[in-house]
Length: 300
Image (cartoon, rainbow, N blue to C red; front, side, top):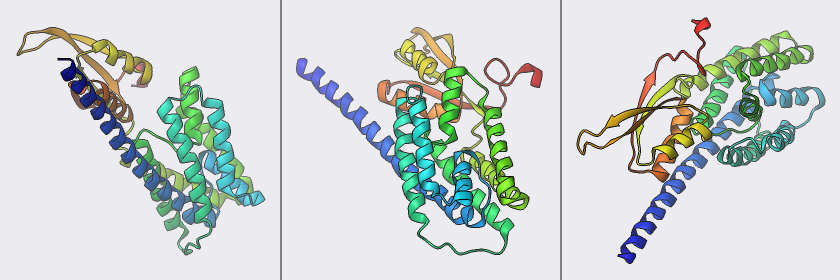
């Protein structure tokens, strides 16, 4: 009997290790590819044409244009500062991956600057292509629930610490970057940079498959309290417990109902697969959500 219990325990541990290994290796491969794609968009389609950019990368390329600083080193320094500031607030997985990706991104940017990319005459086409390439890279990172640093660190920290509406804050920050860029590179380059950033955002949304839309999730698990705690504490979302009864064994219990963003659904799936592989989960798309924590009634 004791031997059988130990056997079950080791099988469970092996299953957990297998899931973790596969999921993180997949994340690593995708993140490396995404970083290279994004870096090509910056080095091949932004810097040579002196376009403005957004976020922390916008600061890095601006210092390149004005003082000749290597954007790879500037970006790394700014990311280190932001990571030190937000280390205690960021989740363990997000922090580890952001540290790795920040260093890899700077290394790839530095390496790609040694390559001579062909110059194109159609500047508008360059702006569009650059936006698509950068948006593809960022979107792939976000789909894995990770980041390469920059403004994402500040946004995550401010949201968790102060509950700020970071969408507006991010918009204002980028407007300041574009305004400063105007005095350095002129209106035309700023406009092309704006077009590139806009296309980048559209591409990112497409990659994320409507990232801003919510997913309505129903879960039946053996340990309802543990799942609820994960949703509340780790994902920062509320949930509702619905009294339910199994149709086959006629056992009373609860069905957990919650609304999550696509990235959070990925995290919840990973948690359930690791800790409660016998759980039952249904995910459907919620086209519109109105109420506390989502769209306000006055905005209808």
